[in-house]
Length: 380
Image (cartoon, rainbow, N blue to C red; front, top):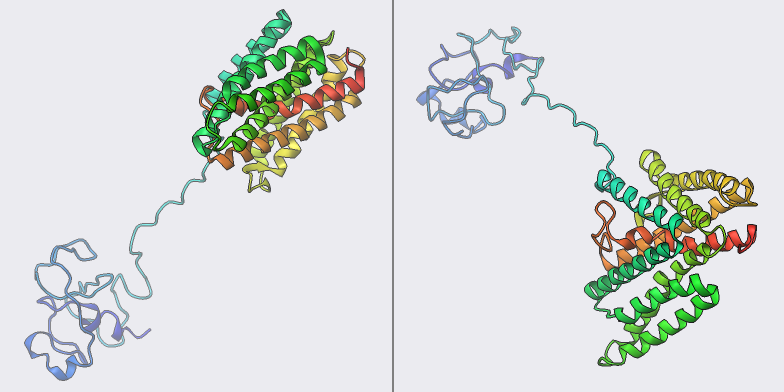
């Protein structure tokens, strides 16, 4: 490249006392610079005095004009002859970076989105309570299920009123929900259906004590809540009523937990393709494969070693059904929360959210496991 346009005083230097004599073809600096040359030269903007030159030294000639952009200084005592290679460290052949290279950002680690330590601690604590009550006294476990149902109904009706202005009557729902669980354990499926019908009737009557505005949406939400939470939970009580009830319930709980764990572990590590992005963006197809694989393996083991007269191939089918129902239940709960515009149904369980956030996959899975166990090994 011809260095006459880079490094010579008109384009690369600054006008001041360091220039020693004009260079051939260059316009003289200072007052002798005439208007004829000025019209062929780019105007040089004024840079504030406190801006240092590229080398870091302050310019002694304060108020002098400098080139805009990266500042260029000519530190040689005399301009280089025409055609000689430039010794300017910022010549076009050796461009200087305007800033030090920034280190590449560290790759972000995947996050579970919750306090994993708290979630594990709460999960272990709940598991210990459930297992202890399940194998010590059956009636105690029925009470645990009834309490979980009442708390879940309270969370659901509270969120409906807060976010949608829907006032589903909690009192008849809570009383009827607990009665459903007890009736299912004592009187079987017939008792559960009768309790469900009476609870729905109680919701209709209870709401009549308030003004008629919003009656239809309130009672509709109440009947939905009665079916969604306590009626589905009644199938856990039906499993418990069998002679080997505790082992059936344990199988149901293990398969659901293993399915959720497999979906989380595989989806967190390998998940790329979204399963239902409009409903739950965090769920992936790879996670579903993990849920099916883990649940089928656990089902084969549980049916072979926990359930009397059960076989491993029945466990494979049971695990497949549990993975499907648990996933659909999780998506259904996510659909409700997305419609309500909330992340969790409650805050009672650190690292998990609310009771309903733990019942989402258990509730729809209970009737599936109950039915398949009845088909495979009888009602007990």
